[in-house]
Length: 246
Ligand SMILES: Cc1cc2nc3c(=O)[nH]c(=O)nc-3n(C[C@H](O)[C@H](O)[C@H](O)COP(=O)(O)O)c2cc1C
Ligand code: SF4
Ligand code: SF4
Image (tube, rainbow, N blue to C red; front, side):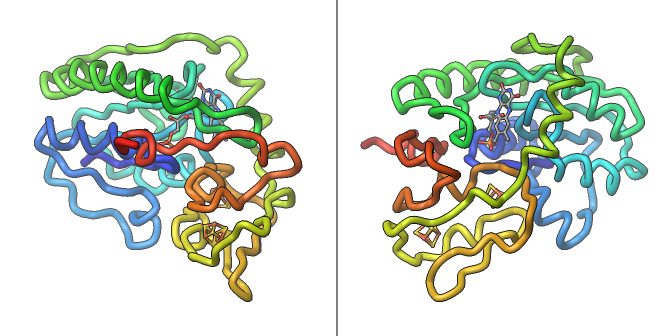
C-alpha cells in the first residue's frame, strides 16, 4: 500500500507513479483517517508526503500513531520538498517506532506561498521532469527491495529546531477570501482538516489551526484566497495546472 498526503499534487503524483510501477495501490491518508485502514495485501508499505518546516505535517504524525502497530514487511518513505527534507525521515521513524528500510528526499516545485513566491511555471515543469526521472530510480529500488537513504540532502543539523516552528505557525487567523471569490466551494471540499466552511457563498476558517498545506490558497480557481497582505502579489502553484499545456 502506498499511503500519501498531498495538498498541491506533488506527493499524489509521486505516490501514483510508485503504485503503478510497483503493482501497488495509492491511498489518500485523509480518507484513511476518516474511514479506517484498508486491508493491505502488499508486502510493502510506503509513505509519500511533503516536508513541512524540515519536519512532518501534523496529519502524518496522527496517521503514524494510527498505523504503527499494524506495520509489517518493507517500509519506505518518499518525502517531497522544495529544497531538502532535513531529518524528516528520522522523525517518521520516531513516530512509527521503527526503522525505515528505504527513504528518499524528492525535490519537486515549492508551494509555500504563505512565506514566499512559489515555484513559477517553467521552472516547475523542469523540476517535475527531473522528479519523474528520480521516480524511475525510486520505483526500481522499491521493486527490488533496496535498503538505502537517497535524494536531496541538507538541513539535517537545524531540522529539530526549525520543525518546532511549524506548530505555532500553522494558524488560520490570516486566511481570507477577497472579492474575486466565485463561490465555487472547492476550498471547503479539498481542505484536509475540514477547517473551511462556506457561509453565504464565502469560505470561513472555523478552526484556529490547520495543516497550512496551501491546498486552498494554491488551488482556488479565482486566486481569491489570501494569507495576510503579501500573497495577493505572489504566484500560485499546483501540479495539475503546471502540467496543463497552456
Ligand atoms: C507548511 C509548509 C512548509 C514547507 N516546508 C518546507 C521545508 O522545510 N523544506 C522544503 O524543501 N520544502 C518545504 N515546503 C515545500 C513542500 O514540501 C513541497 O512543495 C512539496 O512537494 C509539496 O507537496 P504537495 O504538492 O504534495 O502538497 C513546505 C511547504 C509547506 C506548505
Ligand atoms: S475555492 Fe476560491 S472561488 Fe471557490 S469558494 Fe473557495 S475562495 Fe471562493
Ligand atoms: S485551511 Fe487551507 S491551508 Fe489550512 S489545511 Fe485547509 S486547505 Fe490546507
